[in-house]
Image (cartoon, rainbow, N blue to C red; front, top):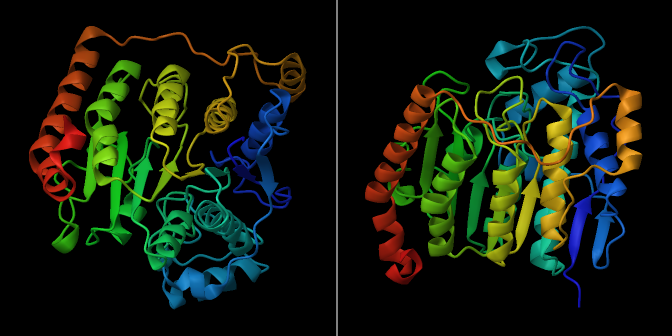
Length: 385
C-alpha cells in the first residue's frame, strides 16, 4: 500500500505582490508546482492535493496578539499606503499591499491543514509550499513574514498531546519559532543558518539553548559564509539527526527554505541540491509523520528545484537531475536559463572554507557539550551512540 501524502494546493495568488523591487516573488510557488507536474509528481498513487479550510482568529491568537492582528487587518483593507513600525508593518522589508492579511492567512491555513492530515487522517507527509514564515513574532511582522504558520500549527499539535521537532534549514535563523517555544520541553527547535554576527535576524547563536523547562530544547548551528555541502551535511549528521532521533517526536515539522543554495542573491552559503537531497532522504528514513513547509529562496529556479526534490523524497520518488523538456520550454518563455537539477560542486578559497569549517566544528562542540546531555538524560543513551 502506498504512503498517503498530501500537497497543500495553492489558491490563486495572482492578486498578491510584495512589489516589483522586492526580492520575495510570489511566482516561485507556481514555478515549483509546474516543475513537480513536469516530473509526474502530481498524479502519484497515494498522494492528494488538498485545499485547506480558512484559519480562524482563535487559532491565530495562540501565536499573535489581538492588537497586532487588528492592525494587520486594518492595513490590509486600506486603500491608501499605511505603515506602523511598532508592528513591523509598511517598511521596505514588510510592505503593505491589498489583501496582505488574506495572503498571510493562506500560509497559516495550509500548514495547519498539513498538521491535521498527519495527526488525524493518517498521512505520512504533508507539504505546504506556501508556509515557512518563521520570522513573524507575536506582535509584529518581520523578515517578509506577517503570520507565523509553524507556531500556529505546532500549537495545534501540542494541544493534542504531540511532541514536536521543528527543524529549520533556511539560511536565516528561525527566530519567531524559537521565541514561541523557548521555555517549552515538548518542542525541540533546531536551526541551521547563516551566522547572526553579520546576517539577519542577528540571532541564533550556540548559547541560545532555551530557558526554564525548555533549557536544552533550542538548538542553533550558526554557519559562516562559504559553508558548502560537506560542512552543511556535517552539521546535520553530527547534531540535528541524532537529536531528532533522541527526542523521538510524534511529528516532525521542517522549514525547507532554499536560500542556502550558493546562487541565492541574498545569502552567502554554498549548499547545492546534493546536500539538500541528502538531508531530505535522511529525514524520510526516520519514518516520523512529516509536515513540510516552504520558506526562503530568492532565486526562483532554486526554489522550484529544491521543493520538487523534497516532494519527490516524501513520495519515495527519485528525481532525475535533467529537467523535463516541457519545463525547459516553459522557463525559456519566462526568461530563465536552463539548469540541471544537480549543481556542480563549488569550493571556496582555502582561507574562507577553513574559517567556515572552524565555525561548524565550534558550533557542534558547543551543542554536544551543552545540549546533548539533556536529551541523553531524558531519552536514553542508545539514540546517540
